[in-house]
Image (tube, chains in turn green, blue):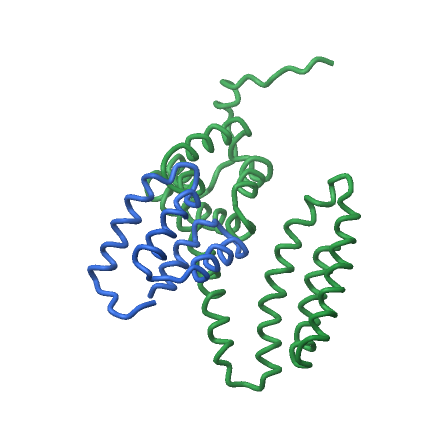
Length: 199
Length: 77
C-alpha cells in the first residue's frame, strides 16, 4: 500500500478543533505550562498537535521556527502567535497569561517557602516535614515527567533501577550523618521521589 | 541585596532588560550571561549563588524557564 500524503490545502480548509473561547485558551495554556518541568516546548507540541489537534505537526514546526527566530522567549512568542490566530489580541494575551501566570505563582512560592521555613517557629520536626514535603513534591514531579522518556530507551529500565539503588545509598549516608529529625522527615520525601522514578 | 534601591534603579533595570529582550533570539536563557554580568559583576545587586539558584529553581518548577527572570527580580526586591 503506497502512502498518499494528505493534501495540505484540503487539510487547511477542513473544519478542525480549536479553542472554544479565550478562557479555554487561558486554561489550556495553564495546563500546558504546569506540565512543563524543565521546559514547556515538548509539552506544547504533544498537547496541541497530538491531543487537542489544534494544528498539524508541520504547522506547529513552522510556528515554532518563527517563534524561535524572533527575539524573546520562544514559548512567549508561540503563545502569542497561537492565541492571536484564534481570538486576536485578547486571545494572544489570554494564552500568554495562561502560560505564565500559574507557573509564576508556583515559582515564587518555591522561593518564599524555604525562606519562611528557615524562620519556622514550630517544633523542628514539623518544619522538617514541611521542607521534606516541598522537596518530595519537586522530586516526584520531575521523576514522573522524565521516567517515561527513560523507560523507552534501550537500557532505560536498568538506569532507573540504578538510580533507585543509588538514591537509597545516598539517603542512608545522609541519615547517618545528620539529625534524627531530618531523617524522619526526609524518609517520606525520598520514598515518594524514588517511587515516582520507578513507577 | 544592597540598600538604596531607588526608583531610578528600577527604571535602569527595566530599560536594560527591555533592550536585552530584543537580543534574546533563541530563548531568554541566551541572555542569562549578560544578565549575570550586569546584576552580579557590574551592579553587585545579587550574589553569584543567588543568580544560579534562581535559574535552578525556575528549571525545577513547572512552566517556562523564562520565569527565572521573575525570580531575579523577586530576589532583588
